[in-house]
Amino acid sequence: MMRRHFVSSLIGCVLVAGSVAAVTAQTKLPRIEFRERTLTNGLRVLSVLDKSSPSVAINVWYHVGSKDDPDQRSGFAHLFEHIMFKSTKNMKSEMMDRLTEDVGGSNNAFTQDDVTVYYEIVPSNYLETLLWAEAERLSGLTVDEENFHSERAVVEEEFRQSVLAPPYGRFFYVLQQKSFNAHPYKRPTIGSIENLEAATLEDVQKFHATYYRSDNATLLVVGDFDPKQLDAWVDKYFAPIPKPGLPLPRVETKEPARAGEKRFTEYGKNVPLSAVGLTYLVPSEKSEDAPALSMADIILSRGRSSRLYQSLVYQQQVAQSVNANADLREDAGLFYLTAILAAGKKPEDAEASLRAEIKKLQDAPVSAAELEKAKNQIITSLLRQRETNLGKAQSLGGAAVLLGDPNRVNTDLERLQAVTAADVQRVAKKYFTDENRYVIYYLPESARPAAGSENRNQPESESNGGNGR
Image 1 (tube, rainbow, N blue to C red):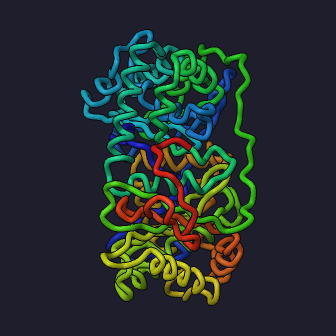
Image 2 (image 1 turned 135 degrees about the vertical axis):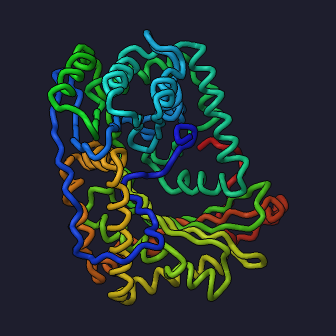
Image 3 (image 1 turned 120 degrees about the horizontal axis):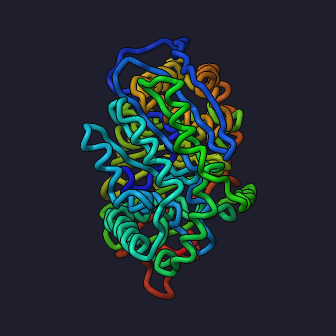
């Protein structure tokens, strides 16, 4: 289930369109007509009426993510994603499963760098029950030794399964860890076993009291409901929750501009093929350059006809897989390029090929056909997402919480459609510079030089010392 795994940025990521008939770049998405209200305790409520099916999606977005983890306590936001499914004052552990799955619905959650999101999909006649349940775990969650220790063990096992066990789990973990110097984005969302083991119940309770509160939450309801009845239920179950008197801290650390290339080498015990990663520091998802960076991502790596696949995998055969990702977050972003090498190839060859593709993007505008294809993929993805109540709710939630304006759900497509070939070339020149590049080589343990024999011309070597920063 998604709540058992950390995920990268949901908002801003564009899914591959697949084998869908092309749509024109001037396609208009249907507007999402939403209502908005804010309770006196600070809870923000957004709702969208859609009676196309007798079902409803409920989302609660908490504006707290892994960037808010306390110092030396990496993984707290992720830990609470799990604890929130345990007991409350009036619910037994895992009761959310019974309230949803037993009536033909579903529930889940995910943690990101900037938010933690909980959601349910149920037949619309169970809406009141789920509103009560979400209010119950907002106001009455049991944060005790039993729940803390059981879910800490689950998170630690998840770390072993998703970071330590897969051949490239540590590669992607280190890629984020090494790419930020000051901002807490350098702490990957999944957390650290060492930090979690060092945590106390008092630490966990303080984190919960600080961030899980009505004035740090946004409730979204999308689907088949009566608006007046919804307001009455929200007032009944959520309005009595008091607004805390505690301050609501926000991350104020700014990631400094990079002043020059940095290079790192990491080693893994179960790495069948070496990997190479290039990262560039880019602005947040609110930036005017965000649409052009997203378009560059798609042109470089979405599908087998993309530039990176055609060049590195098909023609040069230097890599067996390759990817680019405009990972745009609330405070800052990264633009990744990664390659898992083909057998017998050198990391230096893959790096040179990745850099050559970046230079092509800088030296000449992308073709009209490439740009149109990228825009078609975006439109198709957004149309598909909005076919479901959950998709509408999560699109609206991302706009409201991460972009600061729920109406961005209706206007951002125009920003993407307005991107020109010159825009893509401009952001490539602006951000994909030598001074703004970090390079990570991920090699098998067998490639580690013997002590005292490191070549001074090799990239800076970083120890393979577990998961700590």
